[in-house]
Length: 261
Image (cartoon, rainbow, N blue to C red; front, side, top):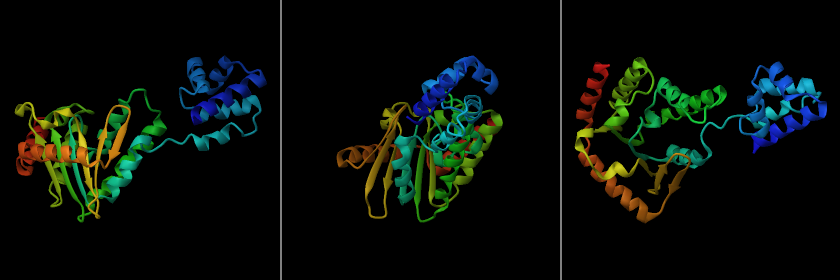
């Protein structure tokens, strides 16, 4: 809504001042279609475009003032409740299928993931989300918490970033897994079918022994406390832990992948 309102104001000021969209695009250094997308609210109005529009249209700072409401969100809106619950949890059990869990990602790995986002994210949003994701990682230093990660082999082999990024990510996993309160296990691809194939999930337990589950898809995420759903996920998680490689076997497996790069 902020994009749409700001874009409509830019269009209204431009039309009132008799400035053609082509002229604004040329002065601001953007294409005609980019300015059109900003005015429609499909693309976030950029500060450079707003500054030029403000000057050309005589808005006297009113358009530039809108940038305060266009700051990128550090996390998608649907995941913010989960972030709070994750920070407060004393037990985090994370099963991931397609990529390295967020708490274990390196900066290079995060950037490679965000650069592949569709629709594309602007540079400011990418930088903001990298900072926000890395800011979560000190949670792993809290030895009063317990973390268990099970990662599918396919996620470890996926070519996210160049060889240096992938090598650094695998090395980071090995270092993180040495902490007594952090277990990292690999689910080998040769195992075939198993109860985790329905998708990734996270189980959280608070200091008050409240249990929560979190599942995330392409465009939404759901945090819930429904006892029936949690019972199903706990059963699946117990089976996944039994089938995955042990932490020691997993460390050797990750080390072999790293050496092969």
